[in-house]
Length: 334
Image (tube, rainbow, N blue to C red; front, side, top):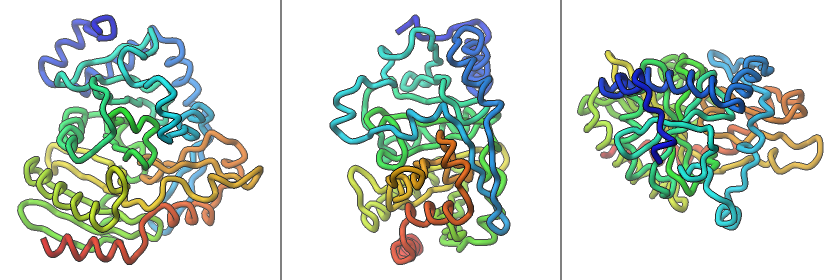
């Protein structure tokens, strides 16, 4: 494994001072110098086509990104997973790919098929299933330790994770996703306060496209305790194997602490995804899409996409109003 680890003096200095955000930036620079695939794909990313649609006070962007075809169309059924090598296991990484060890549990890797201007996969060193129940604390740690430059996302095993058999998070350039900038605007305009106890704010948000819960706190232990409570409610009110369908965006600020958006899902992919011919809309929503930056690797989709199709996709993949109301009542009764 040693040949996979970037141990330059500059990176070691950053790690010894727990400055993983700067260490990740150094990794990104090194990989662009030594790994042609990585360098070429980030160069191409600068020229991707983008559309922007406004839904009242907030916006949804669409990026035409051919490099994301493998991820968008990934087969995540059990048979397909069994028949392929795990591309996140350290022994299966490309020879040129290097990483940074994080807390002896994860390796920070540049994602060579990026969405963000700087995009990382935060992959478990152990091959274990994608699961948030036992690993939420890592999401919080990553959010804080990478907070200078990056936000962190989690895609559930049935909610856009292209490797549901291998635990991982992702990190990307902070304030790149519209929700990074619109978090408070959307929460204040469309939110319903569920709890402001124990140094935490929990809000239910239905902005016409998305149904989400937001969590805000400066206290790690309080945040984890409330997340565990909420996850139990979600698993009961909206059961799915192996966990309630969930995507999470997490960011951290030194003054205000953690800000999380929990997207509550009903489906993995919408009917548009399975249409034939020109009717096919190749968008498979995951965290980044739901945070307002939809990705398609297909030019036909990019040309045809409009407000109506975006609304249909979002409303189909989120839970219904009845379930959302029931979840809110359960949280308020805690």
